Image (cartoon, rainbow, N blue to C red; front, side):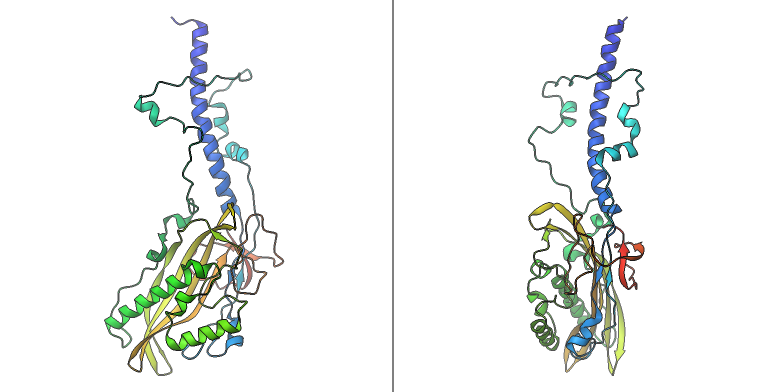
Length: 366
């Protein structure tokens, strides 16, 4: 029969093994929980492109010559309230019982020696072996823990409906129009040069010749503003944390009639999620959720197929609503509070349904 000292030694050995495993879990849960809590508890600013272009550029709603008919959309903005939770607090909140390994001790715990390292070659031990010191762990995806984690990557998220003869157009024409629309969205929302404030050359060359002339002229007259249609971060405010951009949404196929013209109307509604950080500061990485919506008309004129974007706009979260240059100015956790106060109950930035709120509106974290 084992003596009392042997039983105590065995007990301490078992407790040490349980403590080591649970401490590793607790540390991992604390780090993950703290990061996710900062992301999900934060309220963010949300900014939306304005209809104020209509008074500056002429034409139908400020988007060039006919057939543009801009539906007025108010700028929305969202403000931020940040709630931080310390890692130790996370452990206590979620698993306070783990701090004692399920054992109630009458005396203060004594230091427990590290367990002996087993000889190499045991598969079971190798499977649970701790990473060696200095080993580089693969960084977690910046989209982990958010709805964007399950979204498609890049242009794969722009899923187009099946082409069919509609609105006086043949199936072939509709297929061509859908393809060009997908190319336009890719250039407007995924082109890195454009996104970081560069000239939207890829988007410009895809426009119909008449609309392209207007687009280029507008850019010349408004050099300090973001280009219409496209999404752009203000220069020097952000860098991409990853090459991956997440996309989710839908395109609805319908018809239109306007001033004797008829054809196919595409209704666009997407969420585009960017992982960005301050320039040179990967530790400040956040997710910015843009919500571009709009319409595209497909019709025939003078024997050619016309693909004409109209009523395009986008909101973004979290972004400053204190600026009026149409660029996204992302707000990071250490960004100073803006001068525009939020209103209303926080809305979900991952909600695809269009929001008609006006002014600076609160948003849940991204």
